[in-house]
Length: 311
Image 1 (cartoon, helix red, strand yellow):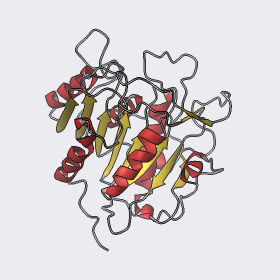
Image 2: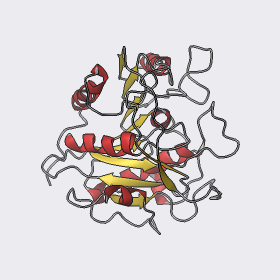
Image 3: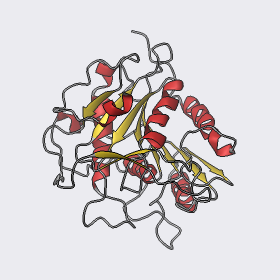
Image 4: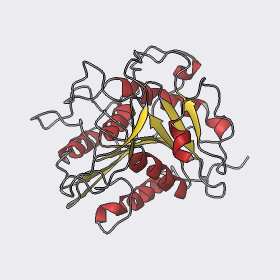
């Protein structure tokens, strides 16, 4: 069962073993031993169904699987078919307001799309829910630690896993979109004390795809939220948002796009006029369901989908 494998916990970091496309997705713990800044006293990890919401709020209204109470972060590696494999990989950050992870809609389905274009999809199970002292109006602190570690871990294993170390991207949705953007712009400084050799490997993704992101715009100000900036070396970004999103206003993506352009960072912004929140990568009649086609073309134009060199 793929989902059962995705939410299982390993007892040690080690290696992922075989990551061939015909294997079940492999799960690797991020941290060797104690997880930084983690008390582990929130109860057992479990899976639940998301609430049904009305069409004015979200594009996908039916319930999908979510994961919560994560205290041991992992990555789950989904490989494309060998004949399609480009060597590119993308870390996937599901959304959920930093309370839960929309594992099915914004994790597994995203990995399937990436596999279809020859990209290894790596779902990041980062720590949720928010811990005491992390207010809902602000991003949670620990997920960025997990995301930085995940990028370094993937890059450190690139040779072993047959991945290109210079074509590692990150995609995120809603709160996960903020996490993707924060990882792509926060690579100059670790948000935790390094724990081993993996943390000597760069945590800068080579490109980022924030989708209907929140927490990017300052309250009542036309500028980036506190804690975000666009330093030199920020990777190219492809931003996506719904123009009718009442959960996360499209201004969040607009503000980031403007900041990227001012800094000279290559960026594209796609806003779909009638789209609400939570459309993921599902195909449908709405124009927003075609954003993955545009993103694929952008990745190819940027050079991230070129085939890996033959040895």
